[in-house]
Length: 177
Image 1 (cartoon, rainbow, N blue to C red):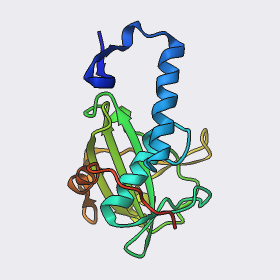
Image 2 (image 1 turned 90 degrees about the vertical axis):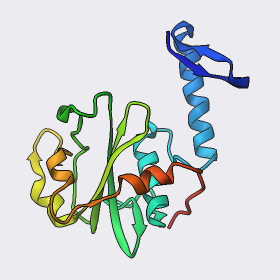
Image 3 (image 1 turned 90 degrees about the horizontal axis):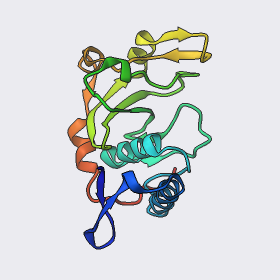
């Protein structure tokens, strides 16, 4: 049985909910997260939430959704944010990042979430290091990077884990560029 707290802290047994009820709950949660300006789209919240946390942690602003390769403007730098949720954070196979179609940014911030969306690790890499560690992938028509433990501690990489964890509380709206 999977329990989550519902209204008045009453437990909800999600294993007994119908598919329609689960999707309605998810839709309601996504609407509320959009209203609170935590996410910006109706897509899975991982990317939007990571962008929100990076902007909050670095005192930056979210760029418009149409800005290719740039998610956050902070400290005078254009930042690309890549994120993943891993059910097993120790499994490097769960750390493939979505493909790069360009390297038109200054820094890459990688955010790895545990299954409960808590920040497990976060790091900022200069664009040149991201480019050097990427590999061409014809299937996705882009370059891919795996967020290995080794990559996240290389020279020139700034650890951001604690700053992003601190940004999770309290939630506050982040202005767009």
